[in-house]
Image (cartoon, rainbow, N blue to C red; front, side):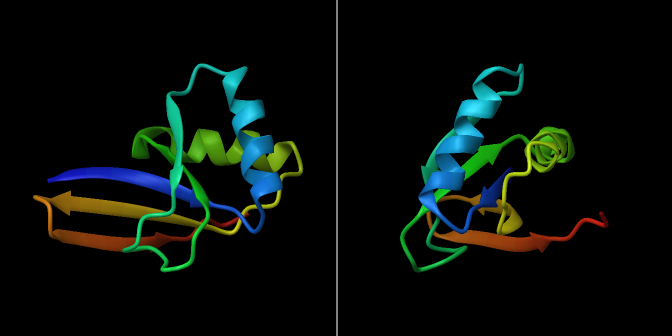
Length: 90
């Protein structure tokens, strides 16, 4: 089962700013549409390796970037998926 972690943002401005900040770092990431299994509303999310999520979150928070939520999405085949919302202590 493949899994990826996603960060969602309250506005597209925050998503674009996050992309700009992370391009200067060594973390692999991709800006993608928010998966339907996370939210039915349209928007942009940052997808990264789950092993990098805490470090990526730290970079964005230190830059005073407003974040919405964190998710781990496990996919098996084309139709089955499991979403887990992740929480961090500040």
